[in-house]
Length: 287
Image (cartoon, rainbow, N blue to C red):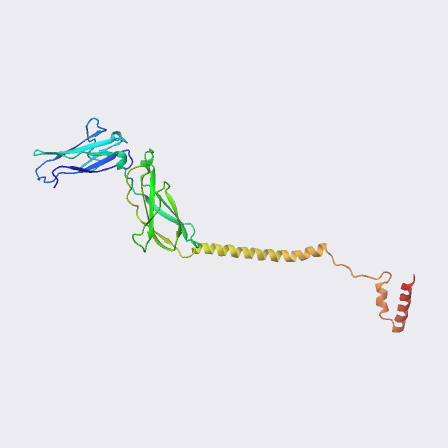
């Protein structure tokens, strides 16, 4: 067991405040009352005592916004004091910017952009959000995100997308099947990567969604029905219009011959009709 305390971890979510933790000394008897004191200085300035031993939990020191300065070096030691002994840890120095570790993204979701896909594969749009937006409102931190995905059937074969600032990303060229997707984030210029988000299971279907096919069928059927109605209404109407503007051409008639006389002549005897025809023909040949 350690005979001196040890500062082992410091963490800040947003550079507005931070917390440090230490490991206590070992071999402490039941009746030994040990008191811990954390002392710190900024950039080799005056030494101060920890402002808050409670907010960060047991064996911790919490620095609120009034005690946090960015881009300054904090050097700390912890002293364990009892009636039997005093023990001081080795100095632990940190810059707040270097201990920033953001929270893991949440609300990871996806939407298919083209459920049917094409010869190059399918496309899906992924989106997520940061769990504590107020940590980003002061402008000290600009987040970058890193997304990984893999086939469900190929464990460990994660494909990594380059870090980006947007909280959404389109994956293209995805073959049909199941996928696992996860995302993490960190400060753009410094700090540590967050933990990974909860993995999202994504399924790329083998064919277009049924609702899409139904819409296509309804639209196609409606178009055919409309075309038939137009054809049935236009064709008869076209015949009536033609009859109105282009009336029938009357049959030609021979000038000077009364149709009524021709009907009566059809009942005359053959000799009389022959004579009449000679007279009419001779008359027509006169100059």
